[in-house]
Image (cartoon, rainbow, N blue to C red; front, top):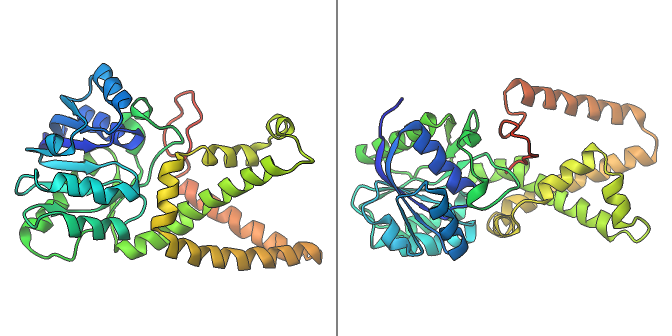
Length: 310
């Protein structure tokens, strides 16, 4: 056991990721007191019932007062408002991080809104399910998942120590930690997460709109591939709306490349170019095998429900 790393942690927004961070940190024994701020009265009531926070409030400033670690677990477009609400109440030397899937805009918001007396370290745990809310979290969510930190361009010892301490926190709850430039992070995630979600939303919407295929038939005859798309497309609409707005440049760049490749694939099908199709399918199968070999095949253990990926 690593021992207590942060005597007081505040989590702003207690959905899937926020509640999982609390559960994992509590189980690992690396935090002391836990304060939660959530805008939803229903969520706050449920968090009290679940009993995994020492303080539950709707006031961000109240939650972060005295906190050694503040985790912003709100939708990406709400990060600016949340960090602004926290700023005046933060104690000197506190670490402020986030769990958003876009880092460029979040890094700008934290730099703009937070005082220099705290350590702003944007982060992104690449883990999740299609579930949401305080009940959705579980302590094993981050086991063997990657957490990407995108530290500011500071070289002072105090900041570097804060970055290492945050990395130790994530390691203690089972994650692998990588450090990356915010812009590079956003491009990588546009390929590995954002575009796949966009495709899933679009193909499920297309199937639902087809008049010649009834909705009942879509559900009745769904094969594995379409079921996977529907699982991904069931993800939190607020979170994904914010991601596409905040990361539009990288998403559009990758979408343009994908469209070109899709047109080439369409031509291969039209002209019966079987060798080209076989070559592509062989190459992509090897990528899948590489993902499995790297231990990244699933986002979490199977607890009897069909968890999806963040």
